[in-house]
Every structure is written in structure tokens, then in C-alpha cells.
Length: 197
Image 1 (cartoon, helix red, strand yellow):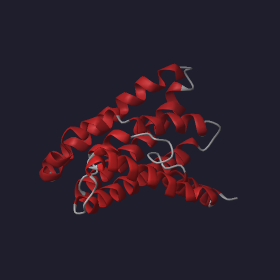
Image 2 (tube, one colour):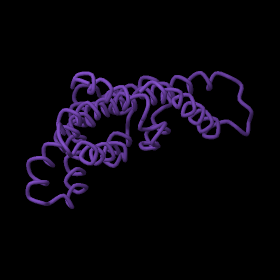
Image 3 (cartoon, one colour):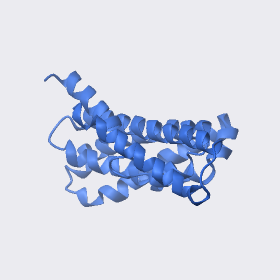
Image 4 (spheres, helix red, strand yellow):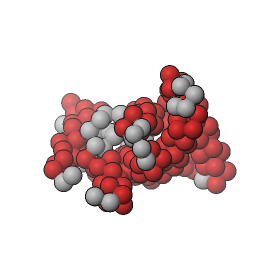
């Protein structure tokens, strides 16, 4: 199998088969908190796409050129959190200047990308999974695929929640219970992608 095919498989696998939210259950806080409106969810998704993809590349480079050669791999988590925090600050500054409405709509969830376990999980998984070679390229594609999968899941949940809001839901299921049931059904649906790769 050539490298391009492998990269496409990594991208599809990360987005659909091993969806970070619906298969690995990472990043549930923003998934449940920001998925009330499609516009907000899409904005969060774009921010996460940027942060995860760039963080995957930067963290892989730091691992390959600094941490691994100097035998400092025990610092992975701390260094990766610092890289992610810096990228989130960059996204926050750009959104505050260029899209203040989206910045306000994301509220507390934008700085929480720093502590989003999905972002850190991808960075740590990349260095473990692809440490044998081609780390940088595979990490970028895995990060992009994971971020796309995150965005797909959060936008789907937001669109479902908007429709649920306009329907008559039994009193005991209103609010978070119906959201959790919906998330469970989405996770089951995404299990159907397991056979394609």
C-alpha cells in the first residue's frame, strides 16, 4: 500500500471509525456544552480543527527533534499542554478580533480547548502510534481526521438538538437525558463505520 492510500485511510479512520467523541469518548465536555446551536458548534469545530491539526504537527516535531533524541519523553504531557495552550490563545485572539459574535457564543468553552482531553489525547496517541517512522505526516493526517470527526459529531449533535427543541419531549427526558440518549444512538450509528477500514 502506498503512502497516499495509507494517509487517506488514517484520515477516514480517525474521522469516522475511531471518532474521538463517539468511539473514544474524549472531548465530551464541549460536545455536550457547545452543541446547542449549529453555528456555535461549527465555530467550535473549526477552532478544534485548527488547534488539533497544528498541535499534532508541532507536538510531533518537538517529540522527534527534542524530546526523543534527548531522552526527555517523560515531559511529553507537560510540553504538549503548553503547545496546546499557546495555540488556543492564538485562536482566541484571532476570534476576538475577527469574529466577536462567535467568540462570545463560545464563551468559556474556547479556553477549555486547552484542557480538552481530545486535543491532548491526539497529541499523545500520535507519538505512541507513529513513533516508528513517518511520525510528522501521519500525525498531521491523524490530527486532521480526528478534528474533522470531532466537528462532524458536534455539528450533528447540534442539529439534532435544534430539532429536538421544537418537538414535544416527555418531561422526564427533557434537557440532558435526551441529549445523552441521542449521543448513545449516535455512537451506535458510528459503530457501523467499523467495517469499512
